[in-house]
Image (tube, rainbow, N blue to C red; front, side):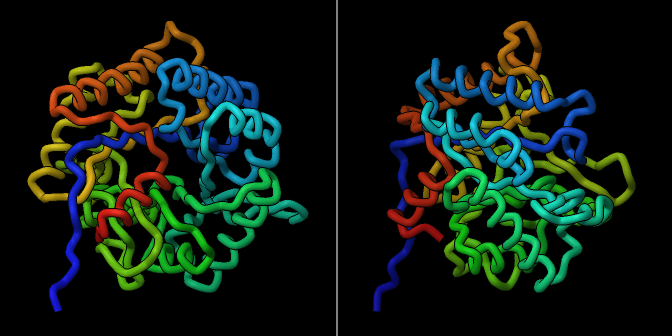
Length: 314
């Protein structure tokens, strides 16, 4: 029987953007972040993307604690057209009604199957109850995941994710993504590093393709065009172009740019270098689409997943 192989879409460039909404004073948050700053960040980025006609690209990826504390804000942003996802780090997480936090020093990457499934179930339930939405998209804080994570997400009903950072390697924090498949793909029940048979569709961020040595011996990292890096337009275009060219050479089924920022700074302050870098990211994808004759399509990870399934993508 003739196999049904993947098809390709060479007419559209999908653009997805996330704001990781992290709890103030927890790992990953800004040192000066407050709940007020977190709200300014969300309002600023939603306003910017709405003004540019790109609200369909935007997903607010919130920790359960943020979803509980800012429920009214997120529901307002839903009405404005933004989408939502569960962003999670187990460190310091205290479920509603619990008397103590989960271990602040122990990343999710070090949780075995049963324990990891239990805590992800609790986080998913708390997030869904806070927002009244089904948790279909999952984001791992700081690329914290192991070989159990994708099968657990699949079992819990998640359908798309951003967990991997191909090229990042820091065993101390459980970030072992050396050799991971570099672009969007269905995940595997056997290994976090390869394509597989699960329904969960992983969408790695757009980033530099060559790893650089990290500050500690034996660690490696890659750079992505988050506003916090304050990259100029030319550098962002270079990173996005290198990803696009690599996807074309690999005959990847669909073409995309996926970037993010955090709720740790006032996006509405138009005078900051970070605001300029965020606007440069938008300009970069527009330039990239125009250069290659592609239709720029604002998309969530769910939209990208739906297109991948239409193409019978791996």
